[in-house]
Amino acid sequence: MDDFYEQLKKRVFALWKEEGLLSEKIQIRARALSTKEAIGNPEHQDFPIQKGKEKLMQASFMDAGGQAFTDMYGDYEGTLEEVLQLPMDNNHQRAVFVASLNAVLRHLGRIEGSIHCRDEEPVRCGKALVPYLKDRYSGVRITQVGFQPRMVENLAAAHPLRVLDMDPDNIGTQKFGVTIESAENTDDAVQWADLLLVTGTTVANGSITPLMDKKPIIFYGTTVAGAAHLMGWERFCPCSH
Figure 1 (cartoon, helix red, strand yellow):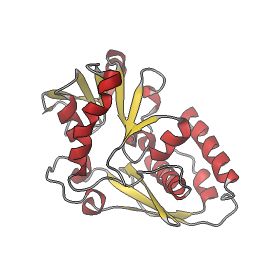
Figure 2 (cartoon, helix red, strand yellow):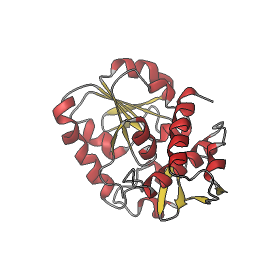
Figure 3 (tube, helix red, strand yellow):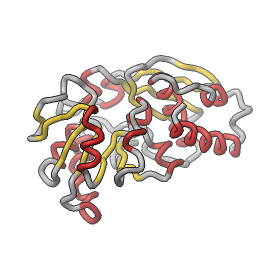
Figure 4 (cartoon, one colour):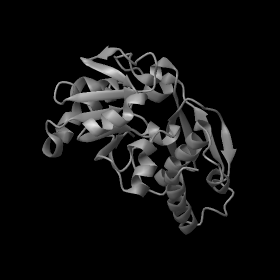
């Protein structure tokens, strides 16, 4: 297992043990949300989730929910101890772990914003990003990992911007004046940037490792909520629930 997941699992284990959850036979249920359930009916139709290649998998734990974007979605039921024993060998295992982590931390009151924004809230999120960055990162070069269209739309007007994505339908296309690049360009794009704006989906799909400990990072989205809390990362997700 990657060292990152080993470190994260150790922190999760310590927390769940401290809270007395490891010995409990608590059931975690995860399912892939439909597009309408996940994001509602936004005016724009260009969000990745609307293309159907990735879906939000939602874990329910007592009174709380937690989510993870993944392209390997499906039901899962097991105890928290069993979740911690998953080997993290594929996207489904990582998504189950991440969604479960988010649900449990939400239940414990350690995190907020573990449920995706809906309807016109993604537009509000994109518009809030440039003001959020202004004081510390005004005008800096940004590499965004993951094509979130409303973020790219607003960032492209205010910053030198490169965007990396894993969707072959996006790669090589122009979006708001920015050419979407393949993840094969990660090393060059990271070196070029002053700041990385990274989708939390990288935690669930295993692509986070090449991005760590190189440049300042701001993660965005609900998928990374629990990991960001435990690892001390900055997360931008102003409209999540």
